[in-house]
Image (cartoon, rainbow, N blue to C red):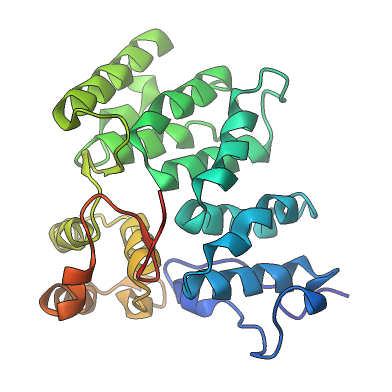
Length: 275
């Protein structure tokens, strides 16, 4: 029998984080979590929403408890959005280790986590993870992550097949990486869309992108995770509602809450992430 907290994953064209089951208020760490990874994950999410990020230190242990791909994806999403460097260093080690299998779902999950953190210094790690597994189905998703970090909009770096060789693709990624390193004078900077990441800048980018024919649900996901604003009304029955979405973002930008967010800092549900 499955957990009562088991569900089909986070739907970014639906309720997003607000569609996740909530544990009973009396159900807290650690006593009642044993044996139910789904309940443990739900409690970790609720703790992170309160700014209690230390709870996520054991999230990788939880990841390995089950081979359920939906559950592992949930762990990956929460780690990418709210995981601290001590958690993510284990993931970096996995991707760097030559002893790891060339491909498993874990490699793609871990690249997703590192890309969600979005530090400029992570780009070579993502690039090498892709190059080591370039012939494997779905690993070109890593190139989409790289493009999302380095380019103002999803561009040529998302399509390695457009380059004469993987070597030329890698050289192009590293040229763009070096350009941003020179602009910011550091590698220790969070980037998104080829700019220093900032929640207010992200909101402004959403308003621009909502006018385009194609809107990336990743923008909604990152905005909702950062601010804790319910963005369920961005979509109706899976269809984007540009005017409604724009109204939600504009209300944020016009509110005093927008002044809360410091440029170049990661947040989860309005709480500043250390590091």
